[in-house]
Image (cartoon, rainbow, N blue to C red):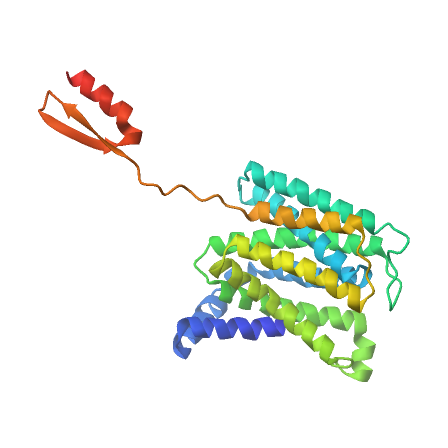
Length: 309
């Protein structure tokens, strides 16, 4: 996945510069000549690598639809770390959205306690292990995301270059993880053993998923992102019914609905009024002229006119 991200980010950076010379110069200046600047992304790179492994543990022990809903708790962890690390202030609607999100996820987890939970067409799942993995993953995702945002805003380095720096640390970390867990299988069967078309498609979508989200945030808005997330939840639920025999109960329906509502509430930004302000003319007898100002400043103008008289 990180190899895909590396080449995709390098390609996007090349498109941005539209010149191979400028592209190569920026890579040399920002990566080779500034090793301490590159070292800043080592922390989120390590966290993202560990988080990816936890994600596979979670999705192996939860239904796809449940995983899609519960994973939205990363919104809550990201908000908490944003307030703590970036001193970001949240409005009343956003705090209410986080509360609704927490309640929705809790309701979905109640559905997982039913006797049918944990049974699939392929193997016995452990909802507790899956939930634990996704909670830890969400905590790590929230911290790493806010940390990455902080170093992005603290420098002039582009998003694509930061992703390249991330991949440079994440790739060797991922290789070490593979060797530690499956060194015998890799030695006897090869590194790409059991890489079926389904596995390659997962690698592709996971690798480019983060880049697509970054582009959505940059070129779209939170409402469109909310629609996309809601569509993913609904699509996962429908696909799970036909592929894995997942049964949609009323608790899951209520909980997922609350999560979708909270996503829209959290991303909602009220539009400021653009109506033209009215102007009023005040007669200044002392200077024998007419003062024209916006209506919002009328009280001050009236006081000034009276004082001059």
